[in-house]
Length: 458
Image (cartoon, rainbow, N blue to C red; front, side, top):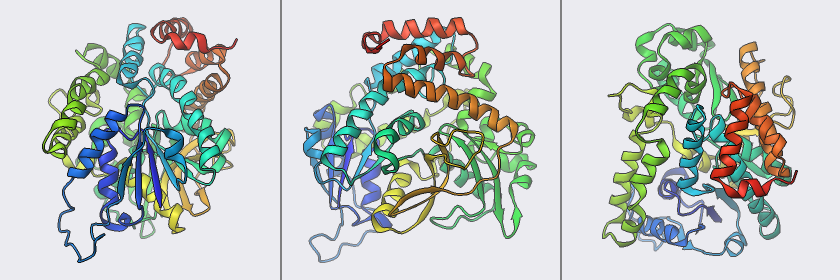
């Protein structure tokens, strides 16, 4: 089997490779192809993979392929890379970290939240990501029409919804935020999760906007007891982000990204007063990283040190000044585990249940059928099917509808080159509290990204 990673110079690629080299995913992929707009970055990551130590406890067999690691190829040409692909992972960052920094800084300059996937920054990012990903989709149709596309590219919900117009059900969007929440809350509630099953898990939402509403076990919903127990709530990341009172009031544990909605003033104040945006922090961390990976004697150790530093700064604005991420907060599986679980189910036709970005269909009557939602879904060799979900509460439907309307206008703007749709997306987004601010920030983004102004067709 041939797996192609578009964005193969990405920082998280070694996590994918490590997962492919051990456990249930070992031996699933024979060839891993890395393709990146910057071939030097892909080569740097190839060196990290080559230097990666064997899994702990690994006992080699007298077989030449005992390690069961995929062969790694760096391919500079996207068309050549895609030929013969069985699965494609797409994890690109259109505009690089420089683009992310502009997404953040332009929003802050307009008095709006500067975050790469939420609000104004997320809309700006989608306007770049979607056209690039649509070009990939068309090439995939031409060179690997039977391949599955697993989309990591942010904003994952909007990008996946756009890709479905070309690829239909052969594209599946993933994110580790929701599955991480479910894993952490289940541990806190004392609810064991069976591998590949979400029986009893009631999670609803959109990408980076959702709620854990129930955890059934032995015929009893264990979530209400968790919500009444401040000590257990404060034992995991989302409980510490929101405190014990808000989840109890909502009757649900919010996804960590709802911090930007439920604590918008505090988030804006924290981000505005920080010396650096998240993008600027990552840029300073990675400025010399890739050159050093190309020359270091032990590139894996260099990468691993950078990974730990990167993880510690995630969603820092939602924690107290001295707050540090705990090791347990990282135990949600990660993008790589979600992506490889999807791939395993697709390639082996072994059904699994995962929280994915999939077509709504009739899951939520109050949302368009073609809208992409983030919900528990069954994935197998024939694709994905959302699992049945209880109706949304009014406050859940209200926020999801408002954000989805903005997302669909963003997708229209990106697919049609329609400036009016982009302005509408900004104007109606619940985190942009002024039509005047929406108009100003769009002009500011057009100035920051000159190609955006020439992109509009009318």
